Image (cartoon, rainbow, N blue to C red; front, side, top):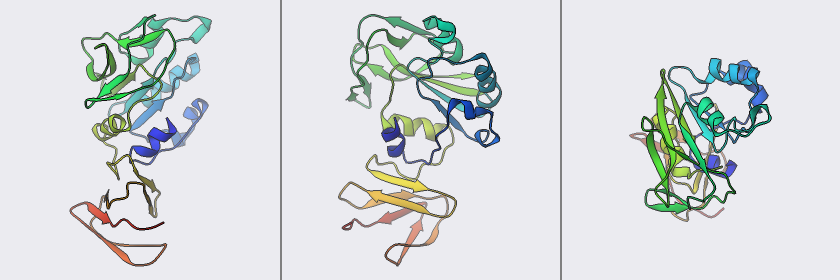
Length: 224
C-alpha cells in the first residue's frame, strides 16, 4: 500500500490508529484505514467524530472491524463501512479496473460488496464487486475487498474527494511539502506535473527555471 500511495500523485501522512485523537489528524479530506481488523469502541467513536463528517471520504481496505471483540463477523465490516459486504470460501480472482487486471493474493474468507445503493468502482474477474463507494450522511465511504488497490483507482478516489493530485502517471513520483515539490521521473520520457498556480518555478538542484502554464509544468527527461 505504501508503493500505491507513492504512485497516486498526492502528498500523504502516515499515522497509527491511536493518532486519531491528535488535533493534527483533523484536517484531511481522505482517510485510509489499512486493514484495521480490530477497532475498539474508543477508536470507533473517534472515527465517527473526525472521519465520518460532511465533505470527508473514508477508504476501508479488506477487513476493517472484522475481528473486533474476538469474533469474526462479516457484519462488523458492513457496520463500520456502511456498505453491505458478504464473504465466501472461493476466490473471486484478480481485480479488474480500466480493463486491466491486478493480482492481490488473499486467503479465505473472500469478501465482496453486495450493496445495491453502493456504486461499483472495480470488479473481480468473476463479476463480483471488488470496490464500491456510497454517500452516507454527507461523507463518502469507499470499501475495497482486497488489501490494496490500483494506484489509478486510488487517484480517481482522491480527485473525487477534492484532493489535489500533482502527477497522474504512476511512474512519476512527487514529494510535496509547504515549500517545494520533488519529482522523480521513472518513465524515461518527459513528465507533466500539475500545479495549483501558474508561474515560474526555480530548480533547486541544478539551477534554472520551469514555467507552469494552464496548471501544467513540463519537465524534460534527463540523466540522474
